[in-house]
Amino acid sequence: MYDEVDSMLISVTNPKGLSNISNGRLRAKVENNDNTLTSHWFVNNPINNYGVNVNIADYVHFSEVYEGENGPLDMDYFVLSYNLEKAKEHFTDAPKMMEAFEHWFGPYPFYEDGFKLVEVPYLGMEHQSSVTYGNQYKKGYLGRDLSGTGLGLKFDFLIIHESGHEWFANNITYIDIADMWIHEGFTNYSENLFLDYHHGKEASSQYVIGTRKGISNDRPIIGYYNVNKEGSSDMYPKGGNMLHTLRQLVEDDEKWRQILRGLNKTFYHQTVTTKQIEDYISDQSGIDLSAFFNQYLRTTMIPTLEYEIKDGKLKYRWTEIVADFDMPIQVTFNNKKHWIFPNSEWKTTPILSENFEIDSDFYVNVKKITN
Ligand SMILES: [Zn+2]
Image (spheres, rainbow, N blue to C red):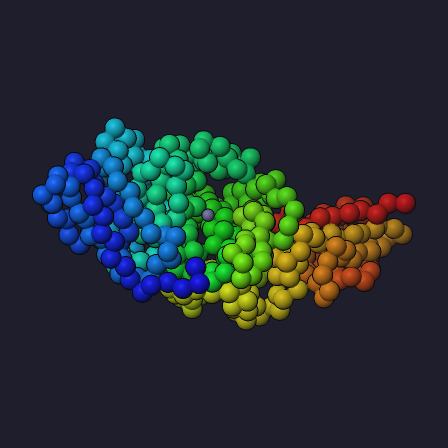
């Protein structure tokens, strides 16, 4: 992933009667004398080597033109003939995906190459402009809801997740796989933004919070550099929840959306480091997030809000934190929402009753001290 070619010609020879679907657009199809066919596909954009795709089968085809932010976008679907009717119904999630993600992330990054869904025998993969699909025409992840809330069954996980990678993985690509959270954290997060767009903010929160049950905090999200070693698979649900927490800190959904769109514009078709992404978000949000990112990306510690209520006073502080971690958090007490600004030292504020609740949108632990 250290670099990408600026374009690619993919030429594949296969037996007559079958077709090969690769990335980009079909430039030519040539019949050979030996009962074979050669297809030439051209990718008119930079492409990751792992995004290159060869799929040979007895495909049938249907298509639509999506009127997107950058004009008409060809959306082509290649499936096995006996799945055609099912696919026509099921792939209606694809234009819904395009609408939600162009809203949140900006224009689809590969208009020249079109967008394709291509049926394959495995689960699926984010091949650039040629997303492969094997979710058995089921909602959720092979029919399961990873969030346990029921909301994961409102969409086909594979169509939404793998297509989300067109923005975070194929458009913005990590240089080193140690920073794979840039792909999987944002794309996990894209699932709840899809819900946000089509089913509202409450549904999106419930979903992303539900995926926390998949977090193991076994190893940090960032892996080891220069040895092709990614970090913990927590980069998916913990990455998504870190970004959801960040949305709360920005406290302005339109600003947050412009940051996500700005990332895709600023780092358009580039390979990047986590530092570039972290610095960009800090700059654009106006919040110094260095300790925040160190905490969630580089340790397995979950910030823990310790608090005690005694003699009409609320005492609170952060524990399980890196140096300088002082994330503000929204809490409810005295029947009102407040921002509090804990750090590693105890702070005190008057409180009228024992009722104290933290906003569950923040991915943190809470510990009440009683004695
Ligand atoms: Zn992924």
